[in-house]
Each structure stands twice: as structure tokens, then as C-alpha cells.
Length: 94
Image (cartoon, rainbow, N blue to C red; front, side):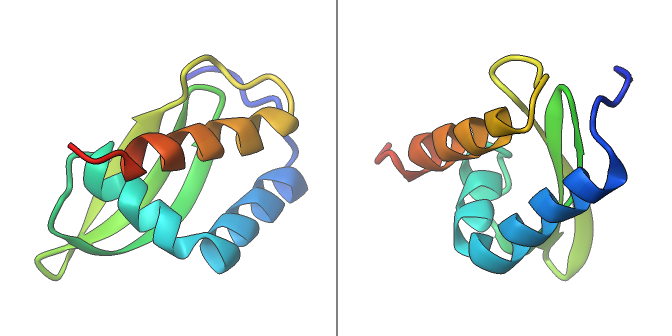
């Protein structure tokens, strides 16, 4: 795993924001980009420089879903850019 450039308080703030304010987007991201169309719930559980890690509920069971960023994350503002990109890609009609 790549070394983590973010302090625990930054990671916790991003997790809290996504789980509190963007749960619907996260579910869509996991269903579409994470190839878990049957997911019924999702929690963003971790971040690293290369991916967002979610725990999805699929058929009543937890499933870890790792969705890579388009490029490694080096600074905090990139999280917003990457989650916005993911939400946009997940919302595209197939």
C-alpha cells in the first residue's frame, strides 16, 4: 500500500462528510463503479492515496469495495474533485 499523506483528522473529516452528506452518491458510486448493483447500503470506511474504500451491504452481507482514484491523491482538495468525478460517472445513463 502507498504511504498515507493524510493525518487521521483529515481522513475522519472526509469520511464523516461523505457518509453524512453524500450517502446517496456513495451508494450510486458503489453500485455502478464498484460493480455492486445489488448494494442496498454503503459506508465510506477508508481512504488511501490510490482509492476510496467502501463497505457495501449486498444481500445482507458486508462487502468491501475499493474504487480507485483517477490519479493518486496528494492533497486534500483532490478528494472533492475525485468524489465529484465518481458521482458524475455513476450518474451517467448506460
